[in-house]
Image 1 (cartoon, rainbow, N blue to C red):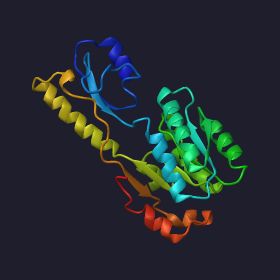
Image 2: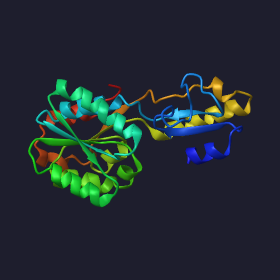
Image 3: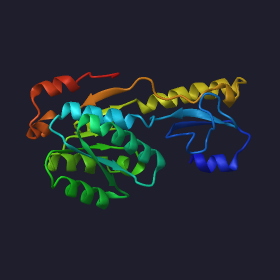
Image 4: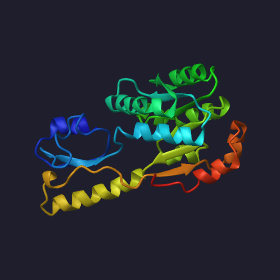
Length: 228
């Protein structure tokens, strides 16, 4: 949607919300001082791929292979994978790109990945993984795969753990930027911001995951594990 609006409107100030890689997408040339008529709030820095991998390995130390469930043609998804790939040797894991475009591909990718032992996966944020979140959580449980998710609502649906920001907070911040623009500020005066309050959320129904064999202390570790 931001791309469409940007193509049609070149002078009216625009505040975007939860955009991935605003520089790479061409929305701004400089995050600290945006040029043109756009500014706003980005969601994830590409380096989060490394953090997600690190957290999955910490909560599931037996994992040796990590699938990265992602949209293969989305540039920011590829950057997340490269970040995880760079961190993998130090964590002694092998990252595997699981490129998907729809529900059927998600089923095939995870089922095939689970055929080998000691696997786990991380879910990269994209429309295809968001709209299929219930399917992904169900497959993780059925296939006995520990998984790390990009938003808390995955954990609320039964996913093992998420590490994320509150997306609603970005809309509140966006409203503040709009107010400042209406009072005379220019987009160039308002730097692109990333989430600063990132926290973890553990599963809301842990009995579903006891079959994975995690000791009780892992659940205590997950609960209220935030801002790491």
